[in-house]
Amino acid sequence: MFLFLSKVLPLLIYPLGLSCLLMLVALGMLWKYPKKAAIPIALALVVLLVSGNGWVSDWLVRSLEWQHIPSQELPVADAVVVLGGGIKEWKEPRPWPDLSEGAIGSSTVPSYTTSIRVPY
Image (cartoon, rainbow, N blue to C red):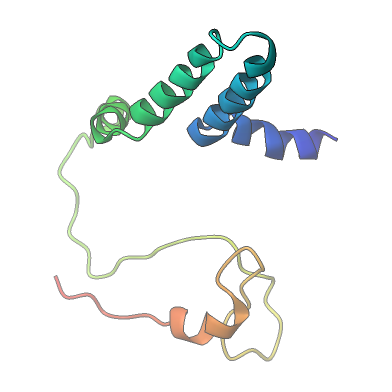
């Protein structure tokens, strides 16, 4: 039950889910309180407009990024290593890594698991 709630409740807090909930509330209010039903509709519109605005998202990201400014100049490197999850345990023999179901689909694995040299 906790796993179900931990997956569903965040979706209702996200802007689109919250707007959908507000629209359902407005739909329920239309029957008894048709004039007051405009309030949840307006709130849903405001939630979508504010959360979809680039200025608001830039402001939120900036408020987090300024806390983690590097204290010194970043070093120059010959290679970039990208670490990630989504790979099953290693078993012999395999020509390429077995990505889990949450990662890239199995039919596209060989084309996405290659490395390239990035010129700097």
